[in-house]
Image (tube, rainbow, N blue to C red):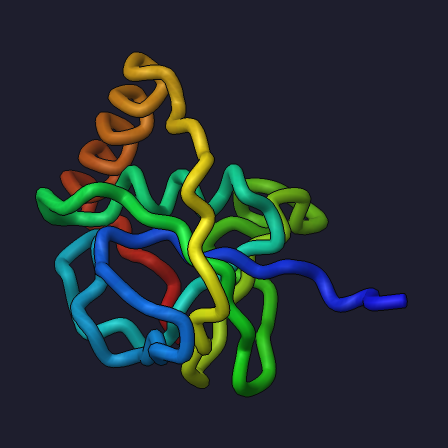
Amino acid sequence: MNTTPTYYHGTRASLAPGDLIVPGHKSNYGSRKKAAYVYLSATLDAAIWGAELALGDAPGRIYTVAPTGNIEDDPNLTDKKFPGNPTRSYRTGSPLRVTGEVTDWQGHPPQQLQAMKDHLEHLKQQGIEAIED
């Protein structure tokens, strides 16, 4: 029996199975510093947020991914916002290998997406950045 969870990564990048998603690209959030980590989730909903909120004009895409190194809880969501990591969101300093693409996902309702974008803009105005240490 396979007990390894399925991991997802939401983005606007066009990728293929076998491609690597690596740290070091500009973040989609805050001041857009180079990200020290790449992010993944064991829930499709968290990946949908990633795809919807990623910068750019390309369509949002969700990939299934396999970590190539250790993963840890994403401190931007765990304990600060959602104690116990119910979003099952993680980060890693190692690449993620794309294993497939989820093509049948549904985005959030427009008003919910706009509320999230407004919230992120409010945080940006306050100078609140993602935790990268």
